[in-house]
Length: 323
Ligand SMILES: NC(=O)c1ccc[n+]([C@@H]2O[C@H](COP(=O)([O-])OP(=O)(O)OC[C@H]3O[C@@H](n4cnc5c(N)ncnc54)[C@H](OP(=O)(O)O)[C@@H]3O)[C@@H](O)[C@H]2O)c1
View 1 (tube, rainbow, N blue to C red):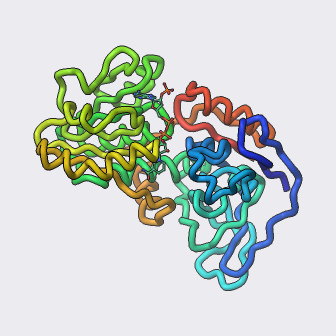
View 2: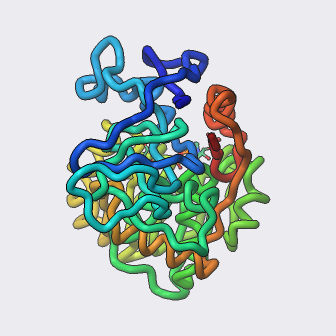
């Protein structure tokens, strides 16, 4: 079979398509025939080996894992010993972030317990957009108390991989949503349903007069002291951390700033690939409350090109890689 592999840490040109042996499922595992995969910033970080601290786990000078790709949707092709509840031909989806990656291939070997059933109503392309970034959006919005209809929610960094899910989830819960991103993406953000948009290159939301009940911070560009100005009394801030230093700052100082300012500043620990989250995403996708945006589709041979598009920031929605 064909698989996209890397022998070192970035740049994206190191990616190559190789012919490798077909995977064989071990006890408790299945082999999934990949119908579609999608790219996330986590895939780019994995490829580049950033943050460098992560290399303590992934290999100091060279990656120990050559496989690439976390979001996968496909069908079960082969079932290993001791697997119950899955049969050949079952439609499934998963986030392989902590399961060895490998979605950018014709087939991938996965622990059976990590796979969730994919409803017939969802196409493989649509399903592949959601496990990683959709789960991040769901869990970050759940990190604070639930959004109430009419609350003012600001999503900072709304135009990337996670933001479009977050904007639509907040709208589905009845929020009035302000989306912040680059000026080129404002039309895209309006199409997602944002009520207001802010171009971060022209306006700094922490300096304006507007106050928000919830700030979901995906871009992670400001300090807590600056961010507190954007919150209404009792307002909630949630960080989807981009930088370890920022996560540490906000985890340590958040409780102090919260107490002093009457707000709630929080971080959250992401738990990838939770069955309940994928089931909830499936319901939202089937109901049309969340409409995934697909930017472009690439074949395995064009994986490096797909990653270049992700890296450029030009994508409007998720980038698919389809074997
Ligand atoms: N908390 C956790 O446990 C956890 C777990 C996994 C992942 N993560 C993090 O979650 C994040 C996921 O984000 P993503 O995949 O949506 O990233 P993304 O695709 O890079 O999107 C980020 C968006 O923010 C925009 N942006 C850049 N600078 C900005 C600024 N100053 N103000 C407002 N927007 C700005 C970017 O636009 P441009 O094109 O202009 O740059 C981009 O559209 C990653 O940083 C990842 O590390 C957190």
